[in-house]
Amino acid sequence: MGVLNVTPDSFSDGGRFDTYESAVAHGRAMVAQGADIVDVGGESSRPGAEPVAVETELARVLPVVEALAPHTRVSVDTVKPEVARAALAAGATLLNDISASLWEVAADAGAGWIAMHMQGTPRTMQDDPHYGDVVAEVTGFLLERAAAARAAGVREVWIDPGIGFGKTVTHNLALLAHLADLVGAAGEAGCAGVVVGTSRKRFLGVLASGDEARPAPVAERAAGSLATAAWAMAAGAGMVRVHDVSATSQTARLYGPAQ
Image (cartoon, rainbow, N blue to C red; front, side):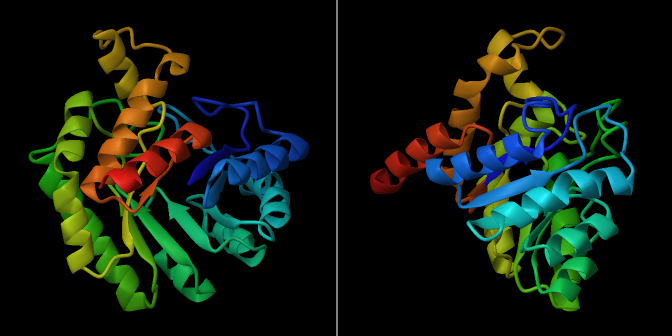
């Protein structure tokens, strides 16, 4: 899954693809580089981000979805039911839902649905993340939401542990360490699979620099992004959500024959 942020303020590439022309061009480029799905988002979910108006998000997302849908599978990354319905009507077939609350929208549209775990909201999630047992709590939450979606009629349900969404570095590493267990649980629950998104995230910068207060900048997180994508593949994840599609596609091609 290639990330296409049509926003001015996303943490990694905000402002790079916030015009129709640049967004569509980048989406097509990612398909050429090996993306199976292009994930279009019109509202930043970086830590501290504030929500945008429905009308603003619709104006950013719909033209891009309509342009790309004839050429590839398109997902829409949103927490707003109005945006989700409009994007699915415009040609998207997968709803990437960081709120894990819109399964009925997906069911009504006959679309796939990704339920992600997040503690809090983007504005508050990194203020003080805390868990008794992060692996058990995240797994339990996702399986409960997956069961609700399947009961509502969603046939294609994916679950995402939400790396970086209300988690410390330690929480993220614990979830990655136990990713194979989550994959097994997802399979037993009848899910399509597990989605993992680590690409360019802050915890990789912390690991690279060794300093929680001074993580390595986004431009220096490629190695960690590829390493964790490969780890996710080895653990059985069915989808990785990435910014660097070409490099990750090469990693996937190398990994496949080596299994």
